Image (cartoon, rainbow, N blue to C red; front, side, top):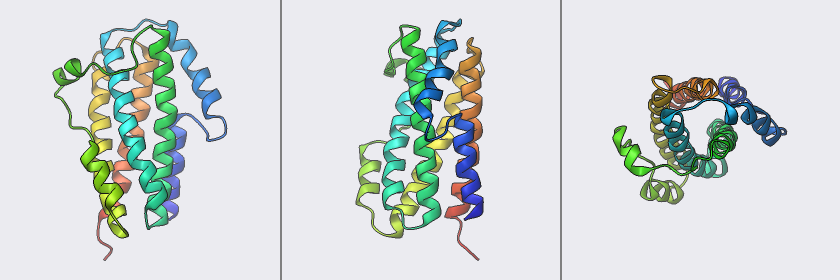
Amino acid sequence: MTRVLMVAVLALWLGGCTATAASDKAEETARPAAAAAHNAADVAFLQAMVAHHQQGIAVADVAADRAVRAEVRLLAAAAAATQRDEVTIMEYWLRGWQESTVVDHASHADHGGRPAIGAAELDALRGAAGSDVDTTFLTLFTGHQHQTVELTRLVTTGGANPETRDLARRAQESATAQAAEMLSLLSPVE
């Protein structure tokens, strides 16, 4: 339980926000990037991540409410909080650049059309019972966090905005830590 708590706290810290000051912190963090130089890679990354995080939040909210194991509920709640804060920041930056906050699906397909957590996967999680909620969530969200790492490459290899690249770095660190923790929670106890 202590290890999970540490990962949850790390996820919130890497997200750059606390639960009580999330919206204030997100707005403070977001202001400088709106005026800074950016390019199509920055925009594509932010748009893709907004959609991606919205899927993650939906899945994490179910697990935070219904998972059997306390450490799974805590991890899901921390992940949802971090991703909500990041969505607030990313949407603020996009609006500041007068760009859409909605992903251009044709452009997304150009970057490999990464699979998403769809309605069927979310319905399967919602329909799961008991420990199947934990297993289904951990499996779905591990894949989700691997996709987060893949999406960060959109901006780390071609983005122009330093704040966007920094957000991508923090999202990559948080996703990697959470994926490792989820894999350990999926492993059978010996």
